[in-house]
Image (cartoon, rainbow, N blue to C red; front, side, top):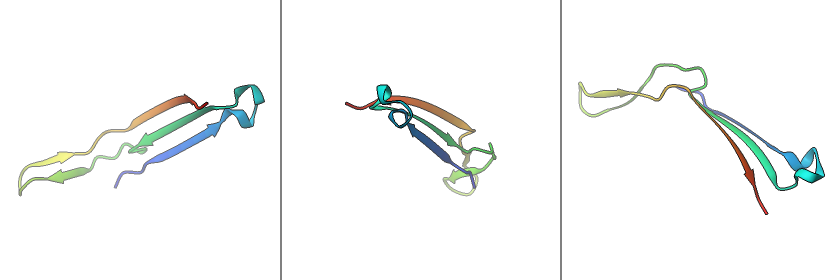
Length: 61
């Protein structure tokens, strides 16, 4: 089974000038394991996604 993880940080907590900014990193299939995501019948199966990492920077006003 794949392992997912996420972490985020409010940049305003470190510096008042950065109030409203947030950075976040999400990882899917963190250990890049091969797995069967699903099957349609007895012989038609598909593998799950490889490791995917997404970083975002957002501002909320």
